[in-house]
Length: 344
Ligand SMILES: O=C(O)CCC(=O)N[C@@H](CCC(=O)O)C(=O)O
Ligand SMILES: [Zn+2]
Image 1: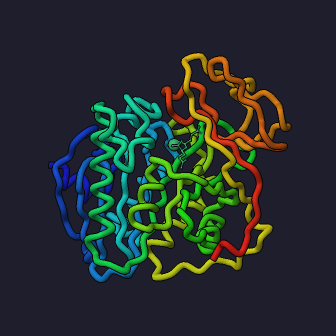
Image 2: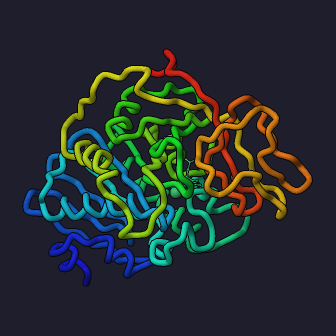
Image 3: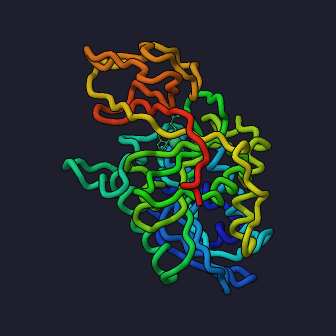
């Protein structure tokens, strides 16, 4: 039904938006031999005829109002289908939450990026986001496992942040359970224009953590700028990210400039603050940017009767959101750290 249109236009994003919950699987082959497989709405896999030993997942629209990453992925998909670029490696693109794109909201019923690692099936709740998280886990598992063992895997989950950020672009490096962080991944991020990286210190139920933990993928949540509606993104600000992602899937190997400690700003997550009470607020305004530091003892907010105060000098705020559901993360705080020998 939609296949002819996809072949002619490459506009998988529009087809996805017109089919918010389901799309029958279809496949075809490009003249250059690349097999194009639509697995579901928002899920499209490309397999070059002779593919290299790296498998990439690029996801966007896990939050529907974060439009710049959606535009980047849309452009890459169109370029592949039009054969303006030729793939070297397998790649799976995911538009996470099509209905939330259409309503221009972070999510519809529940934050999709808190439902991975099986959380979708806990608590006796069912909704479209829970069903979607379960399916996305399955598609990623299938993609990473079906081409065989011993292959390199990466999953870059592309987002934009609700607030301004002192450091406009930054990445969240999921908790690695003692495995070493990789310098080469910092080089990849720098090439995308991302100089700031937060090292998580505990498990999470995010999409990037899922791929990191279960498939040993190099995985990040990458914040590329600020949330804006379609049409308001200055795509020149995302040119480096798009070019780097394109290089990863079209070149056998991407080589990056040498990494110097001064090139990157690293933070370790000091603590996660979850919301426990209806009466929850921050003392700082909505326009206070991410990475703003507070003096030790300074009042950051209230959770019911409980005061939230900075515990260490310079404790800086990331992703403050007083409106999250009860039990969910309302704030991350970070402190600076250094590039150490722990990075391989
Ligand atoms: O700006 C915000 O408050 C949220 C931006 C966003 O969606 N961030 C991700 C980070 C996921 C992670 O911790 O890896 C999220 O909150 O889901
Ligand atoms: Zn997001």
